[in-house]
Image (cartoon, rainbow, N blue to C red):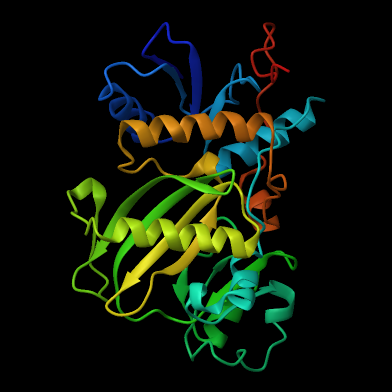
Length: 315
C-alpha cells in the first residue's frame, strides 16, 4: 500500500517501512515549517517498492532493501546501491581513536569465534555481542559469556561479522548526530537511562527531555569520529555517561536512520542529504551481512513484475 502526503511539492521523499510512524514523524516535523518543499510517498513494504527514482530521497528499512534488491536482481533489474559506513568502522575507530570509542571493541567472523577458547582481553566476562552491521531476530544485541555466544552462533553463517564490546556502565543519555559531507546537519537525543546505568529507558517519543548543553559536545564528538574514521555520510549514535566525554556507540547509514526530534530545519537538511547521497554515494555501497541476506532476501520471492512494470527502478 502506498500513501501520499502532502501533495504537489517539488521534491519527493520515498519512505519504505513496515511502520507508519517513520513517514508520519517526517511529515509532521516538516509541517511545522509551514510547508517545506517536500512531498512524502510512503510504502508499507508488503510488496516490492514501486516507482523508486534515483532523483528522490529514499528512506528504507534494511530488511526491505535486502528483499527488494534480491527481487530486482532475480528479475534482471539493477539493485539499489545505497551508501553505508563500513561494517568494521566502529572496531577500526576503537583502534585509531580509543578515547572516542571509550571501550574495547572487536569484530570477528562467526566461524572464528566458534573456535575461541577464551574471549579477547579487555572485553570482560560478558561483553555485548551483536551483528557488526544490521539486526536479525535470531541474534539480538545482548551481553553474553563465551559459551552463550558460541551457542547463539551455532547456526550463524560462517562469514557473519560479529561485533563484541565491553560494557559501558553508567550511560545517562543517548544522542544521534546526522552527517553529510563530513559535517553534522542535525542532532537529537533519543533516549534516557533512568537511573543512569539502569535498564529502564525513556525515549524521545515518551517525552524524554535532554540536557541542551550536551548538543554541542555531541556534534563535536561525532565530527571528530567522522574525521578519525574517514566517514562522510551516516548517522552516529553517542552515549553520555556520568563522567567523561561522550562515547561513540555506532554508525549507521543515513537511509535507515530513525527520524528523531531534529526540528523542521534539521529534518529538511536530513532529506536533502538522503537525496544527495543516493545520487552521488560517498561511502561504499551497503553490503548486507550474510545473516541478514539469509533472513530477508526471499520476502518478495512470490511476486512477479506487473504489466505496468511497477516494481522496476526508474533510472
